[in-house]
Length: 153
Length: 394
Image: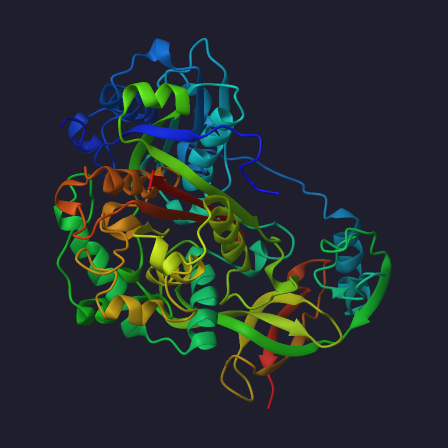
């Protein structure tokens, strides 16, 4: 069967690059969430009036009940690690000597939580472990206004 | 109400195959043409016989042009015909044949050519492409990528059911070994559990040898209405069931936040089995090609398909039940791990189910009789499932 030749053998490739800029709207819910992070170092969610779940990340609707969720509530800066990952690769695929950790944190007072960086502090990073948000000194209205979550005892 | 009410029976006349490899010489249009032509030739049909074309691919940025299918529709025989494009991330691989079924079942067409493709290696950094599948506000800046995504999910799965890395490794040993005799496979290799366990971690518990390769390739199949297929094939393979499930992108805020259990995959399987009238899949399904971009994904999908108990797929594989000569063989083609993983062209899972039922799987043919086979696709942010059940008349 033909066609298993590699393109290196074929000779001609057309080389190029795609670069495109964006300015994404953070959305109605996202704007409020990031504004609260920047101004007040608070993590906010929206409450569904029907099932009463507190949605974090916030959405203007409950995806289960499919009704507007426009009541804003503050949730705790602390929570529990649902799962986590360690990586020996940087985001550009380069190999790293020391791993870094990310995980899903279910926040106290919320039904949901955040995907964020985890830093071992008082305990190793583990499923079910307690963590708390560490805010950046200079905040810009961005998810990295939370620098990371550190582990608690 | 039966899911089959009001729709026509649909059979699959043929499949179109070509070897998967990294950096194929063909451009994508040429890949699509090769498998389309192969499928039509095997069915003894010409392009004129085709009423409509359904095509699927998952990740346009690999191609580097938007709506990459517009270059390819001619290669899929679509000129002057109704044409459909399908994309549901990785599950495109099985949701596209599912859509092809729907077009025939609805009565809109009698013969549909279904084609799936992906040419990943035109792109020079697949991980960079994958970094752009996450939302720009909450997730992407924190630094998610595919290895980490799998680490999060695999850790939750192992934690939930108490599964070992050895169980994962057994899947890789089976699938890479199975691919040795698959003439279309990119990575057939006899390996040992130790080799898998000693391969470098990409993110615990997922290691390099738990992971499918970057691949180029395409797959096709011809779908036909009952009246057409009865004239052309005296032992038709029918689409007996299709099912799908979706979940929210916001995996951290779902009602089920446990990434260890794929609710949407259980839903897809349930719907497909209900339509097929299958009540005991572990007995009534004789062969399966579950989506296995990573070893633990094959395990999760074996379980979601109900072929063993939840959390039991690793032992099921370790005990040899999923082997080519086992009671319920799984991915005798080598799956995505062994055959290669050109994402949309993971439709190969569907094609191998057809080949096994037809007894045309060559050296990959399993020992036991196969009248009924099931395949799955998986995609999005732990989000989408598509399931198809194929089978011959009892």
